[in-house]
Image 1 (cartoon, rainbow, N blue to C red):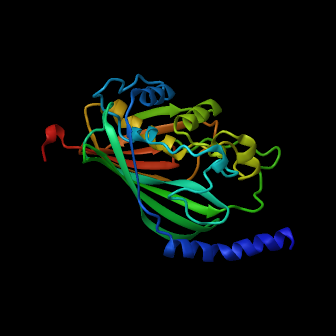
Image 2: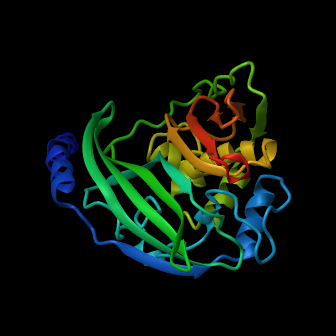
Image 3: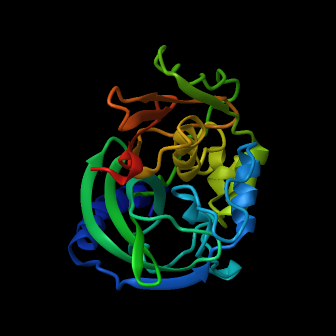
Length: 306
């Protein structure tokens, strides 16, 4: 069978495989437990060129910084060609899948602190299909509860998008124009800082989160195999960057909820303007990383009042 025929057969099989996964794939829930230590929080603060917000027992972790803990550490032999594990509790049974971070939501019921013994309970909340511009997509929402002493401290949902790998991606043409800078933020955005996603920063974040996905540190793979114009900035890194805005500009306010969505990828090494505009009611803010990732943060009432 020719390469073209093989690619056509794979494309024909994709809707069936995606529909079968959406209809029947319901993996069992998973639970893991571990201590929250200071070193990962100190390391992430250094990546953002900030003083560590949590370094002693009892200090609060900023929202989403729990991503540095309870990491999956598969054996090297368990990784696929893209650097992701070939199998896992929440990896759908799709041929030649590609994984993208679509966004998510969190509710912060109470702080997680350095020294806490945290239990994370995870399950697939929903699985659905959609036809996208690049083909069929499988949309998987994974729900996590993080508990300390039996109390739910954080509830989180992550939206992961899977697509079938392009059998013959088109790498950027030689002599192509440079990647354009992202669109500027709204002119009146009072909160902002610049994130410079050079290869060193992307490598450090990959190492900090034990993420071996090659699109973030292997430029030859990212451009030649997956057809991106350069290294891809991590979706979780951009979500954490959004939450740097209220942490830096509204340090007296506690984040109660945060919702974010990845609308398109961003690439190294173009600088990214991370920007935010507080609501007129001062109950939250609209956040963005360029125009590629958007989010909304809601603050807890002041002094615990309703």
